[in-house]
Length: 224
Ligand code: DC
Picture: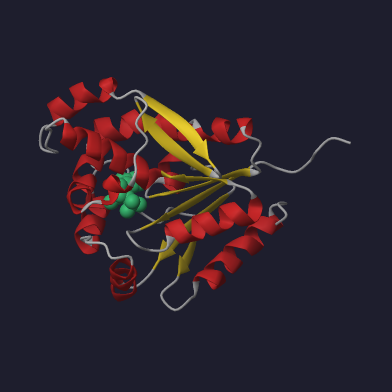
């Protein structure tokens, strides 16, 4: 009998520390979805551009440098990791310096254009690795990258709850500053797109958020 299990594309957007990563990872494990953290892509690119001595104000320099970044993908467990000319980014992309600059580089249209097809191409990577689908987290996944995704979630949480989460991770991060830059940029700003399912996690545990999302995923035909 033919396998009628669908291949699901699930988009999870939200501000910094809104719970996207924990939720995406949990859903990935529960439904065997490939997990794609697009924030890590913008962070890796930021790290490389800073390493090349470029500032986010130098748009022409950034545009000239991008084609030299040879992007690849390595699937590590259930996570798709970006490789740049054989380098796999590690914890260095979570540094205070990257936190400080990533939203500025991500606002450059050439940077977003450079990553657009790469991100869409992750669906083919997930199919090739026989995952049941992919769960991709970011800022513009449900609005720009996969507007036709099977499910689009938008996670929210109060500024206090989000600051507390980052502090618990021991990270220095200007959440408010980054959200402001991400929400007000001209190209692909952070928005809750029409039709997306908003979940406010301020007073919810991770299990409760994952539970809500899981119900909707099951309704689309996937089994845990
Ligand atoms: O998810 P994160 O906090 O690691 O993302 C880091 C930055 O990358 C975020 O401040 C803005 C940018 N980003 C983006 O512009 N678009 C995405 N889809 C994902 C991240």
